[in-house]
Image 1 (cartoon, rainbow, N blue to C red):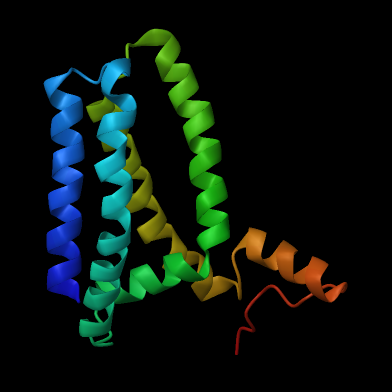
Image 2 (tube, one colour):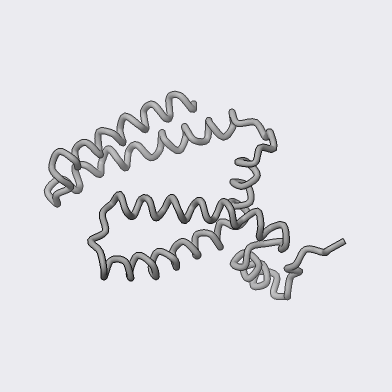
Length: 149
């Protein structure tokens, strides 16, 4: 599943990107180029699922960081959105941001979240947004800090 999904997904995605690149990301090919990109998401998702199944829980540092980021998914999503709106809006006023610059910014935010998430969860049970969600769901204040035994 991993091999076929990623193979088919990457092929479709590359076709879609090639269509966009050949026409310099013009509006004329926006829909035409997006069709293979959209179709490529399903096999890519299945391919990633296959990779996750193959990746045994070996307790590596990378896996630990990814698990922590996943446990704080809502907080991380909201924080990257807020950081994007604040920093990229300010940078866009001073510079003409390219796709490459925005991609590098995304990688930096992801790296920051992979560093921050395990640190946070060592001290607290949940991310801040997850904690607020639980309080609202259970309609009572939920424990937030980890006990320091």
